Image (cartoon, rainbow, N blue to C red; front, side, top):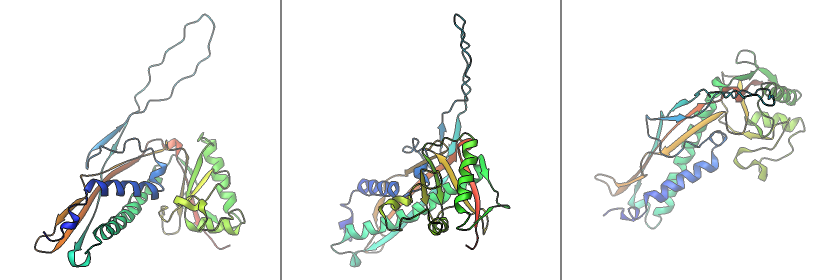
Length: 282
């Protein structure tokens, strides 16, 4: 059979490779609660179980306590994003190197999936419950004011009772440049600290993550998301069936395709902050 070197490659191996690769390179998705990832299906929903606030009362000795009935604050997250990759491998181009060529194709598909997933989650900035600045009145940041605005943003989210422990923020490359020019970021882009977008802790944030997928609210205004831990946003995803490795009709070639389905939601708007900021000259 033409191209039969591919059919000995188990689809589950490539599924695991894709999932593993995505986990390494995602930034926004890795800042989400992913407890719901796994058995999700295209067009389906995931129920996120939550309860309302718990009351705290004064205790009086020898008096009965009042037991509260917790409110059901469950949310539903739609799995409404469906992305695929598909490519063809001609037998004449792939003799003796089938796994290498196929691996390169899956890796490129992974790269494109990564951008799509992170852009989707970054676009959830509109659901943030705590804001500093706005799309129409952003903070205009130069190297002389960038630290001030990040510090004031941190103050705003702390005043909204977002925990200080483990506080993170996502920033575009131009903000790192401003921080570098301000003398507060002294790591070079090839330092180990830059793994997975992390550029260290600055202005009271434990971690800043740099990404080109930071969302723009308009042509000049950047959104910086911030929270602590992964309570604010949820993300669930799965490969919809195995990566398929099939003979191409009427060709001595092999078709490879994969379908990735996912969804995301801001589940705690009160735990997600958004800074609206624009770049100005130094």
